[in-house]
Image 1 (tube, rainbow, N blue to C red):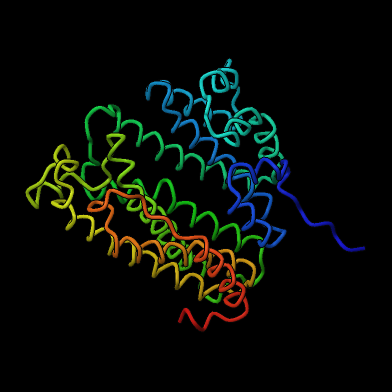
Image 2 (image 1 turned 180 degrees about the vertical axis):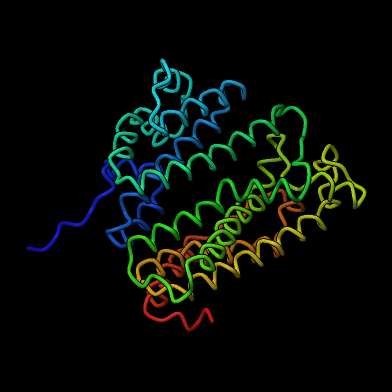
Length: 325
């Protein structure tokens, strides 16, 4: 009798409500890794929702993030769940439903096998540390604050995304025989870069909106080295363009590690799943180069036609990755 495919252990309609693109991606993944990936995504999206709910003070969000981390690790802080659900009231309908469904998401998480649970709990520790760091740096949206320096930005993109690439790689090696022709240690390093690259693309794309909210992810030391200042960036955004271009090049370097990652994995489904965000990341960087957001003030978005094209390309890459070599 054919084995029934594993599910995420949670209502897939909930997953679809918070990310249609990820919902499509997870259905393409090998059944063996779907539960842990689906649940980890929901946990990360929940912590992100807690961190980003702007109608409450950063100090309150920090406390709720800390309580959420204890819940993830299996602790039972008094009134933690009720406090999170009382204070975190997102506007997005899917995120609102996610916060309401946290008990079920956590129950599904704690039902994972021991290895997956430990790996995913460690992952969430890193992600929540990164989200907390964000709240600690950007405490006042009335004035523009910049990340201190390049090392701080590198640490941040590792905590919220690079560690995800590492976790994904370990999970795939654990569940999928002959996952890669590359040793796990080397591929994990590429996975780290891949995740960091995707996060850095998001940061560069979102610069106009972040500046409106008082957040500048271009390092203050680098801005000062070229004679500008975070406080002046809105009045004279073109002055910061050289720093933007340095990090744009850094994102391209990191995504090239993503290309090598995709080339190095054997499993067709995961190659397909990895290709889609990589292609969209590269396309976004190309659009940012043509229409620098610091000069246009506009958020760059890859058109739907490019998304459809990338999806069709991913099917081809699943069977042959020669175009990426």
